[in-house]
Length: 253
Image (cartoon, rainbow, N blue to C red; front, top):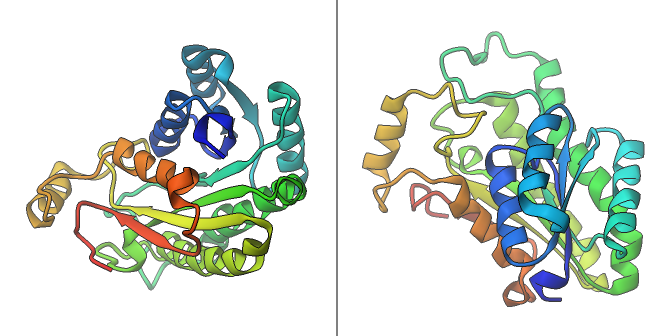
């Protein structure tokens, strides 16, 4: 299925990387759901910019009932079902190395919050769209990871661990769903300059990344968004269960 024939749900799609992914799919002619939970104003503003090819829909990805409702609303709006899911939502987390909780202070509740947002959120969206994807014998799921679980230059224990778990989830789903024409992959960016989540990161950290990265630049949301497009496109039809690191070569897997 070509990109302009797809209906795409982007969780956490109103800001940061999610916003860049929404704009990338809209640019290619896809119908896009801008999912939001708290950022209604930003989601509505983005919808107004993109016009009828996009719709802003509220849902907490941790709540399966809200996610199922969002998928029904998307199908009603576009008059065709969701074919493509980008699991990008980030629940109550900021990349702030100064205020992070170290090994002596990190709580299980913090781990659980990030696992709920990353893994449970992805499970809820897949299950909400699975019946129609099976019927179409087509589906594309792209989970957003991080290079930090391979190279934890900052020990964000809760976030890094949840994304490592998401990779295991990605590969198990790829194995299970491939028989139905559904691919499941992951795109793992580096620290992105600059999003709401990375706003607390100092310029010195960004400069260090730039100096130690082969491409001599800090990854931007648009760089990762274009990699997401690849996994949704016909060019990636034979690719599943993979993790593509998009960080300018900082981590070479």
